Length: 281
Image (cartoon, rainbow, N blue to C red):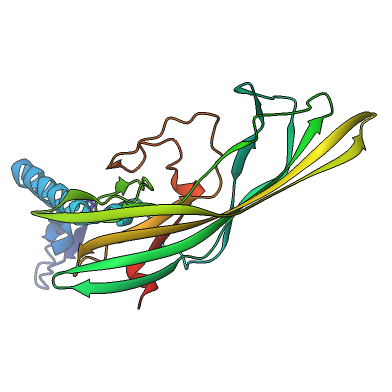
Protein backbone atom coordinates (compact mmCIF):
# COMPACT_ATOMS: atom_id res chain seq x y z
CA UNK A 1 0.00 0.00 0.00
CA UNK A 2 1.42 3.39 -0.95
CA UNK A 3 1.74 5.93 1.88
CA UNK A 4 0.79 9.54 1.31
CA UNK A 5 2.94 12.14 3.04
CA UNK A 6 1.79 15.68 3.78
CA UNK A 7 4.53 18.33 3.99
CA UNK A 8 3.95 20.91 6.76
CA UNK A 9 5.64 24.37 6.72
CA UNK A 10 6.16 25.99 10.13
CA UNK A 11 6.15 29.80 10.07
CA UNK A 12 8.42 31.33 12.75
CA UNK A 13 8.44 35.13 13.26
CA UNK A 14 11.63 36.67 14.73
CA UNK A 15 11.34 40.23 16.07
CA UNK A 16 14.51 42.25 16.98
CA UNK A 17 14.24 45.63 18.71
CA UNK A 18 16.97 48.28 19.30
CA UNK A 19 16.06 50.42 22.30
CA UNK A 20 18.32 53.34 21.33
CA UNK A 21 17.02 54.36 17.98
CA UNK A 22 13.83 52.43 18.01
CA UNK A 23 14.83 50.86 14.67
CA UNK A 24 12.39 48.24 13.75
CA UNK A 25 13.60 45.15 12.05
CA UNK A 26 11.13 43.54 9.66
CA UNK A 27 9.95 40.09 10.58
CA UNK A 28 11.97 37.28 9.06
CA UNK A 29 10.03 34.25 7.96
CA UNK A 30 11.97 30.96 8.04
CA UNK A 31 10.93 27.63 6.54
CA UNK A 32 11.43 24.91 9.09
CA UNK A 33 11.37 21.50 7.48
CA UNK A 34 10.11 18.71 9.62
CA UNK A 35 10.56 14.94 9.06
CA UNK A 36 6.99 14.66 7.81
CA UNK A 37 7.69 17.22 5.13
CA UNK A 38 10.22 15.02 3.40
CA UNK A 39 8.40 13.44 0.47
CA UNK A 40 9.14 9.78 -0.18
CA UNK A 41 11.02 9.22 -3.40
CA UNK A 42 10.27 5.89 -5.01
CA UNK A 43 12.64 4.34 -7.50
CA UNK A 44 10.45 2.87 -10.29
CA UNK A 45 12.88 0.01 -10.86
CA UNK A 46 13.03 -0.88 -7.16
CA UNK A 47 9.26 -0.61 -6.90
CA UNK A 48 8.74 -2.98 -9.87
CA UNK A 49 11.23 -5.45 -8.43
CA UNK A 50 9.46 -5.34 -5.08
CA UNK A 51 6.06 -5.96 -6.71
CA UNK A 52 7.52 -8.85 -8.69
CA UNK A 53 8.99 -10.33 -5.52
CA UNK A 54 5.61 -10.07 -3.78
CA UNK A 55 3.90 -11.77 -6.74
CA UNK A 56 6.48 -14.55 -6.76
CA UNK A 57 5.97 -15.11 -3.03
CA UNK A 58 2.19 -15.29 -3.53
CA UNK A 59 2.58 -17.75 -6.42
CA UNK A 60 4.99 -19.85 -4.38
CA UNK A 61 2.56 -19.89 -1.47
CA UNK A 62 -0.23 -21.05 -3.81
CA UNK A 63 1.98 -23.74 -5.33
CA UNK A 64 2.70 -25.08 -1.84
CA UNK A 65 -1.02 -25.59 -1.20
CA UNK A 66 -2.57 -28.97 -1.91
CA UNK A 67 -5.45 -29.35 -4.33
CA UNK A 68 -7.82 -29.68 -1.38
CA UNK A 69 -6.51 -26.47 0.20
CA UNK A 70 -6.70 -24.52 -3.04
CA UNK A 71 -10.30 -25.60 -3.57
CA UNK A 72 -11.44 -25.27 0.07
CA UNK A 73 -12.36 -28.93 0.29
CA UNK A 74 -13.83 -29.81 3.68
CA UNK A 75 -13.45 -33.41 4.84
CA UNK A 76 -16.50 -34.57 6.78
CA UNK A 77 -17.04 -37.13 9.47
CA UNK A 78 -18.25 -40.35 7.85
CA UNK A 79 -21.90 -41.22 8.37
CA UNK A 80 -24.86 -42.83 6.63
CA UNK A 81 -25.93 -40.80 3.59
CA UNK A 82 -29.02 -40.67 1.43
CA UNK A 83 -28.36 -40.00 -2.24
CA UNK A 84 -30.16 -40.06 -5.57
CA UNK A 85 -31.22 -43.28 -7.27
CA UNK A 86 -32.03 -42.88 -10.94
CA UNK A 87 -34.18 -45.77 -12.14
CA UNK A 88 -36.63 -46.55 -14.91
CA UNK A 89 -38.59 -49.35 -16.59
CA UNK A 90 -37.69 -50.30 -20.15
CA UNK A 91 -39.84 -52.14 -22.70
CA UNK A 92 -38.14 -53.57 -25.77
CA UNK A 93 -35.06 -51.62 -24.81
CA UNK A 94 -36.86 -48.26 -24.65
CA UNK A 95 -37.56 -46.26 -21.52
CA UNK A 96 -41.26 -46.02 -20.58
CA UNK A 97 -41.67 -42.26 -20.17
CA UNK A 98 -45.15 -42.43 -18.61
CA UNK A 99 -43.98 -44.64 -15.74
CA UNK A 100 -43.44 -42.52 -12.65
CA UNK A 101 -41.10 -43.02 -9.72
CA UNK A 102 -41.96 -42.50 -6.07
CA UNK A 103 -39.69 -42.59 -3.02
CA UNK A 104 -36.63 -43.55 -5.08
CA UNK A 105 -33.42 -43.19 -3.08
CA UNK A 106 -30.03 -44.72 -2.37
CA UNK A 107 -29.08 -45.18 1.30
CA UNK A 108 -25.29 -45.42 1.59
CA UNK A 109 -23.93 -46.80 4.86
CA UNK A 110 -21.02 -45.32 6.80
CA UNK A 111 -17.80 -46.82 5.38
CA UNK A 112 -15.92 -49.19 7.65
CA UNK A 113 -12.17 -48.66 7.24
CA UNK A 114 -9.14 -50.64 8.44
CA UNK A 115 -5.46 -50.19 7.58
CA UNK A 116 -2.60 -52.67 7.43
CA UNK A 117 1.07 -51.71 7.04
CA UNK A 118 3.50 -53.81 5.01
CA UNK A 119 7.02 -52.40 4.85
CA UNK A 120 6.95 -48.96 3.22
CA UNK A 121 3.33 -49.35 2.11
CA UNK A 122 -0.07 -49.44 3.78
CA UNK A 123 -3.38 -50.80 2.55
CA UNK A 124 -6.78 -49.37 3.38
CA UNK A 125 -9.69 -51.82 3.29
CA UNK A 126 -13.10 -50.15 2.95
CA UNK A 127 -16.53 -51.78 3.14
CA UNK A 128 -19.94 -50.14 2.80
CA UNK A 129 -23.43 -51.05 1.63
CA UNK A 130 -26.00 -49.39 -0.61
CA UNK A 131 -29.74 -50.03 -0.37
CA UNK A 132 -31.60 -48.88 -3.47
CA UNK A 133 -35.37 -48.54 -3.21
CA UNK A 134 -38.10 -47.27 -5.48
CA UNK A 135 -41.84 -47.50 -6.16
CA UNK A 136 -42.86 -47.42 -9.82
CA UNK A 137 -46.31 -46.13 -10.76
CA UNK A 138 -47.19 -48.12 -13.89
CA UNK A 139 -50.27 -47.72 -16.12
CA UNK A 140 -52.23 -50.95 -16.36
CA UNK A 141 -51.76 -50.98 -20.14
CA UNK A 142 -48.21 -52.23 -19.56
CA UNK A 143 -48.57 -55.91 -18.77
CA UNK A 144 -44.85 -56.60 -18.82
CA UNK A 145 -41.49 -54.87 -19.00
CA UNK A 146 -37.83 -55.82 -19.38
CA UNK A 147 -37.39 -55.65 -15.56
CA UNK A 148 -35.87 -52.38 -14.29
CA UNK A 149 -32.67 -50.42 -14.66
CA UNK A 150 -31.06 -47.97 -12.31
CA UNK A 151 -27.93 -45.94 -11.59
CA UNK A 152 -26.58 -44.28 -8.48
CA UNK A 153 -23.38 -42.65 -7.30
CA UNK A 154 -20.81 -44.64 -5.34
CA UNK A 155 -17.60 -43.69 -3.53
CA UNK A 156 -14.54 -42.91 -5.65
CA UNK A 157 -10.87 -42.26 -4.78
CA UNK A 158 -9.47 -38.74 -4.89
CA UNK A 159 -5.88 -37.76 -4.11
CA UNK A 160 -6.29 -34.59 -2.05
CA UNK A 161 -2.73 -33.48 -2.87
CA UNK A 162 -3.14 -33.34 -6.66
CA UNK A 163 -6.89 -33.70 -7.23
CA UNK A 164 -6.44 -36.92 -9.19
CA UNK A 165 -9.54 -39.14 -9.33
CA UNK A 166 -9.14 -42.92 -9.60
CA UNK A 167 -12.47 -44.58 -10.51
CA UNK A 168 -13.27 -48.03 -9.16
CA UNK A 169 -14.08 -50.60 -11.86
CA UNK A 170 -15.47 -53.39 -9.62
CA UNK A 171 -13.88 -56.19 -11.62
CA UNK A 172 -11.67 -57.56 -8.83
CA UNK A 173 -8.44 -56.66 -10.66
CA UNK A 174 -5.62 -54.52 -9.26
CA UNK A 175 -4.73 -51.26 -10.98
CA UNK A 176 -1.60 -49.22 -10.29
CA UNK A 177 -1.47 -45.48 -10.93
CA UNK A 178 1.64 -43.26 -10.64
CA UNK A 179 0.76 -39.73 -9.56
CA UNK A 180 3.39 -36.93 -9.65
CA UNK A 181 3.56 -35.15 -6.29
CA UNK A 182 6.11 -32.35 -6.42
CA UNK A 183 9.50 -33.91 -7.14
CA UNK A 184 8.28 -37.38 -6.23
CA UNK A 185 5.91 -39.94 -7.74
CA UNK A 186 3.26 -41.59 -5.61
CA UNK A 187 2.18 -45.08 -6.64
CA UNK A 188 -1.39 -45.98 -5.74
CA UNK A 189 -2.88 -49.44 -6.22
CA UNK A 190 -6.63 -50.00 -6.15
CA UNK A 191 -8.98 -52.96 -6.44
CA UNK A 192 -12.73 -53.20 -6.00
CA UNK A 193 -15.65 -55.59 -6.09
CA UNK A 194 -19.36 -55.45 -5.41
CA UNK A 195 -22.04 -58.04 -4.73
CA UNK A 196 -25.82 -58.12 -4.78
CA UNK A 197 -26.91 -59.29 -1.34
CA UNK A 198 -30.66 -59.14 -1.67
CA UNK A 199 -33.32 -58.16 -4.18
CA UNK A 200 -36.96 -57.67 -3.30
CA UNK A 201 -39.92 -56.74 -5.45
CA UNK A 202 -43.65 -56.56 -4.94
CA UNK A 203 -46.45 -55.70 -7.33
CA UNK A 204 -49.51 -53.89 -5.98
CA UNK A 205 -52.67 -52.70 -7.76
CA UNK A 206 -54.59 -49.56 -7.03
CA UNK A 207 -56.66 -46.69 -8.37
CA UNK A 208 -55.10 -43.35 -9.24
CA UNK A 209 -56.60 -40.33 -11.03
CA UNK A 210 -59.56 -42.23 -12.51
CA UNK A 211 -57.46 -44.83 -14.28
CA UNK A 212 -56.17 -48.14 -13.10
CA UNK A 213 -52.48 -48.39 -12.22
CA UNK A 214 -50.27 -50.88 -10.49
CA UNK A 215 -47.30 -50.25 -8.25
CA UNK A 216 -44.03 -52.08 -8.44
CA UNK A 217 -41.96 -51.73 -5.28
CA UNK A 218 -38.30 -52.75 -5.51
CA UNK A 219 -35.38 -52.85 -3.09
CA UNK A 220 -31.82 -54.00 -3.90
CA UNK A 221 -28.95 -54.28 -1.41
CA UNK A 222 -25.29 -54.21 -2.47
CA UNK A 223 -21.99 -54.55 -0.62
CA UNK A 224 -18.86 -52.78 -1.85
CA UNK A 225 -15.33 -53.90 -0.97
CA UNK A 226 -12.47 -51.55 -1.80
CA UNK A 227 -8.70 -51.72 -1.30
CA UNK A 228 -6.27 -48.83 -1.70
CA UNK A 229 -2.50 -49.24 -1.24
CA UNK A 230 -0.29 -46.16 -0.85
CA UNK A 231 3.13 -45.29 0.63
CA UNK A 232 3.08 -45.49 4.41
CA UNK A 233 3.71 -41.76 4.90
CA UNK A 234 0.96 -40.72 2.47
CA UNK A 235 -2.10 -39.27 4.23
CA UNK A 236 -3.58 -37.54 1.20
CA UNK A 237 -5.94 -40.26 -0.03
CA UNK A 238 -9.65 -39.59 0.34
CA UNK A 239 -13.03 -40.71 -0.92
CA UNK A 240 -15.87 -38.65 -2.31
CA UNK A 241 -19.47 -39.38 -3.25
CA UNK A 242 -22.08 -37.29 -5.05
CA UNK A 243 -25.34 -37.32 -3.07
CA UNK A 244 -27.15 -34.47 -4.86
CA UNK A 245 -26.97 -35.02 -8.58
CA UNK A 246 -28.81 -37.80 -10.45
CA UNK A 247 -27.43 -40.04 -13.16
CA UNK A 248 -28.86 -39.67 -16.62
CA UNK A 249 -30.00 -42.53 -18.85
CA UNK A 250 -26.59 -43.08 -20.40
CA UNK A 251 -23.98 -40.90 -18.69
CA UNK A 252 -20.62 -40.30 -20.32
CA UNK A 253 -18.31 -41.22 -17.49
CA UNK A 254 -14.51 -41.43 -17.40
CA UNK A 255 -13.32 -44.80 -16.11
CA UNK A 256 -9.61 -43.89 -16.18
CA UNK A 257 -7.62 -41.68 -13.78
CA UNK A 258 -8.24 -38.01 -14.45
CA UNK A 259 -8.22 -34.58 -12.84
CA UNK A 260 -11.15 -33.77 -10.58
CA UNK A 261 -13.91 -32.00 -12.50
CA UNK A 262 -13.58 -33.90 -15.78
CA UNK A 263 -16.69 -35.97 -15.04
CA UNK A 264 -20.10 -34.29 -15.05
CA UNK A 265 -20.88 -35.30 -11.47
CA UNK A 266 -17.65 -33.93 -9.95
CA UNK A 267 -19.08 -30.74 -8.48
CA UNK A 268 -17.79 -29.78 -5.04
CA UNK A 269 -21.13 -28.51 -3.74
CA UNK A 270 -22.83 -31.82 -4.62
CA UNK A 271 -20.28 -34.10 -2.96
CA UNK A 272 -19.21 -35.33 0.45
CA UNK A 273 -15.47 -35.85 1.05
CA UNK A 274 -13.81 -38.05 3.67
CA UNK A 275 -10.10 -38.61 4.30
CA UNK A 276 -9.05 -42.19 4.99
CA UNK A 277 -6.24 -41.31 7.39
CA UNK A 278 -8.79 -39.56 9.63
CA UNK A 279 -10.89 -42.72 9.86
CA UNK A 280 -8.27 -44.99 11.39
CA UNK A 281 -6.78 -42.72 14.09
